[in-house]
Image (cartoon, rainbow, N blue to C red; front, side):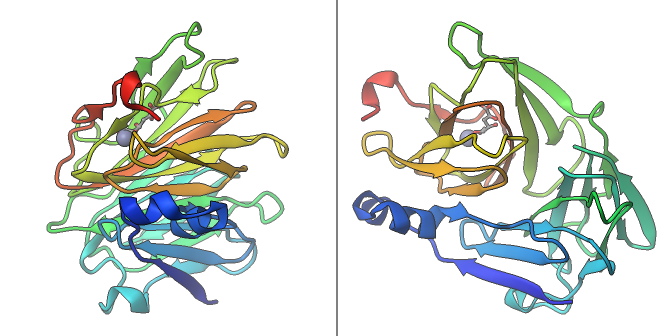
Length: 280
Ligand SMILES: O=C[C@H](O)[C@@H](O)CC(=O)C(=O)O
Ligand SMILES: [Zn+2]
């Protein structure tokens, strides 16, 4: 088995403002992450966040050594969070097995060793979404169920953004060094996320859109508030957000998304709200 890793250098705001559609996608969008039998990682230089998809169909898949980290073991100086968005499967680490159903997660502390991934039924494989950031201490590895996630209700039907933010990796749920991870789900008919928009220059963020019909598209907005651009995303595509960029989207139909952040603090509520008058 091979691990494919693509490296994304950072894109600054002046550069982003001049890019055409393909240029914006090359800088920010992660396509085709979930491929049967493969481990596909993207190493972003935004806080060195690694984002990936692991889809075990036959042999057990592993993330042990990843040359791009320059360490013997992937988790030697990193922590990770893994959320399953597919069929039932198991993540093994440190000699323990963590069975993960749909939308269940595991936080894995620094130094745990090789990560193993298996699907219960190769015909309905698990889709493991992997997030990893540099760590400075070992926090306990924790299995995070849907019930354990802290729920925050935001928005309203009138604003087309009634939604529940499920905080999975958050100081109120489990310890971590940098990673903050959660899953936002919508009330039927609500399609807008994160509008009014915000920025947080001390943390990068990455969104994975999923749970969409084949023909559904997300119009995801990025860029500085006065210089917004959009990219059109389909099911299971991710988009990187530098600290200077807004990250907000509207779907043409039902969707959910996983957000993840890394950076200087872990205060979910520490965001600079963008007044509607500044959006252009
Ligand atoms: O900094 C926080 C992130 O942008 C997300 O948590 C926003 C989000 O999930 C939402 O508004 O639905
Ligand atoms: Zn944010």
